[in-house]
Length: 199
Image 1 (cartoon, one colour):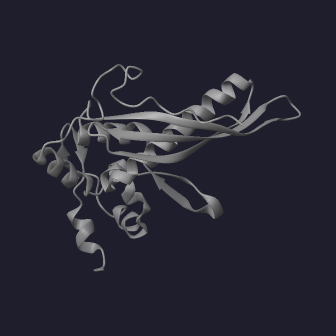
Image 2: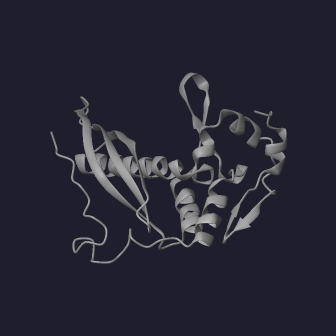
């Protein structure tokens, strides 16, 4: 079995000798970031795909959550690294196509050293070569792991997708109700908050 590769410590010679991971946020920066992380996402960030039993699964696309992370933490305020990958299966079909599944642990590190990790999964079915199968599965697993790690920081980075009541209500909100954060429109869904039952 492949041994997990540990990423080099931030600020080490291996990572370029810089101080990333040891740069503190100011009190003002921390308060602004915390405020942004608590916000919910608007309907313009919600994509859907088919799920089991004819259900619909809501999710955020990878490029959108990367843009949001850049806006929340700053383009130089966060980083991500592949902690480990593991191939779960590689099968060849009778017609010579390759099916492959793999998992990937991703770590997201903020400039002050705060980090979150989660596991992502990727698969390829029907690829014509192992190279194509690995390329698709690795990218999918890394993107999935990145999204899952980022969501641990707060609602605006995808954690709101785990709130079933929010998902139910967000579909009722017109996409025009947005308020800008940086250069990205992030919805502050007052109408959703008002329609949610009191806890």
